[in-house]
Length: 338
Image 1 (spheres, rainbow, N blue to C red):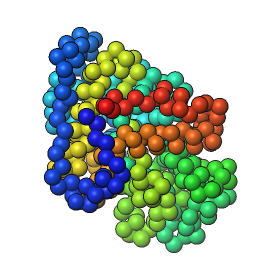
Image 2: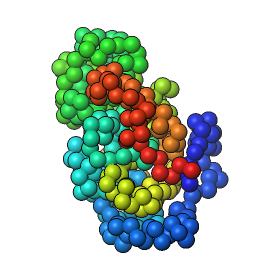
Image 3: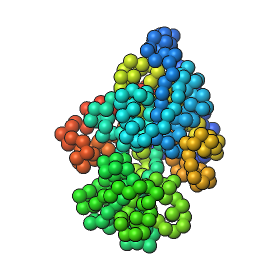
Image 4: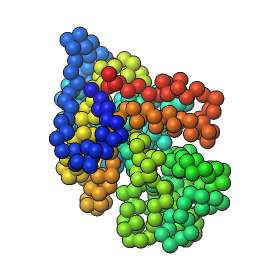
C-alpha cells in the first residue's frame, strides 16, 4: 500500500520524530497474483537498478543492502550513472528502474524516452545561492545577470532555476545562464564571472556556515516548493508493461527504504558513507538528510508533475500544445495506488 499522507499529517509526523510510525511490509499478493508474478519474464532474474549518487537517491542502495528488494523475492544489483547516461540506460532497458531529478527526467520522458514514473522519492535538495555580501537578494535582482548551473543548459539545475524565476514573475529571457563545474561555482561568483548559482544544499552548506553565501530561493525550504518531490522513481516502460507485478514490488521495496531512512537517519548515513553513496562531512550530511522528506505522497507527486509540465510548456522546454492531463497519463503511473 502506497503511503498516502496529507501534507499536514506528514508535517505532524516529522515534528514528532516519526515516533510510533509502523513501516509497511512486503507487497501482499493474492494466490492469483502470485501465480501471475511467477509467470512474468523478469521472475527469478537479476534486476539492474540505477541512480546518480548522493544521499537523496540513496534509497536504491538502502533497499538493496537492507534486503527490502530480497523481501519481495527480487534479485537486484545497483549501479551509478551520470544523469544523462541514466536517462538513456532506463529508456533502453540497460537498467530496469532508477531515480533522478524530475528536472532531468521529465523532458526526456515526455519526448519519448521509454520510461514511466511510479512514485516520488524525496523533497529537497537544491537552492539558488548568491554571495552573502553581494547585491543579489532575490530572483528579481538577477535581471540582466548571470546564473551558474553545473549541469548543461536544459539540464536539472537550469530547469530548476527557470521555475524559481517563473514563480517570482521574472522572465527567464531576462537572465543569462552559464555552465560552471560545481567545484568552481563559488570562485566564479567571487571573481564576478557569475552572480548566483543553483547547487545542492549539501555542497553549499559549508559556505553558508562560513558566511560566504546566502540562500535566495530553495526547493527545500520555500513553501511553494517544499511539498514537491525533487527526485522521481522511474521504470523502463517495456519492463513495466511486461512485468507489472514485479514493477509494484520494486516500487514497494523502494518505499520501504524511504520509510526506513526516516526512522533510522543515523544508521542510514553510516550505510550511505560505507557504500560510497554519500561523501564529505558526516555531520553535515546528516543535517542535510534531516531536511529531506522521503515520505512524499503520490498525491503531492502528481500535483507537482502537473505543475512542472505546465511550467515547462510555458518555458518552451516541451511542446506548448501538449495536453497536460494526457501527457501526465503518458509519464505517470502510481503503481501502488489503491
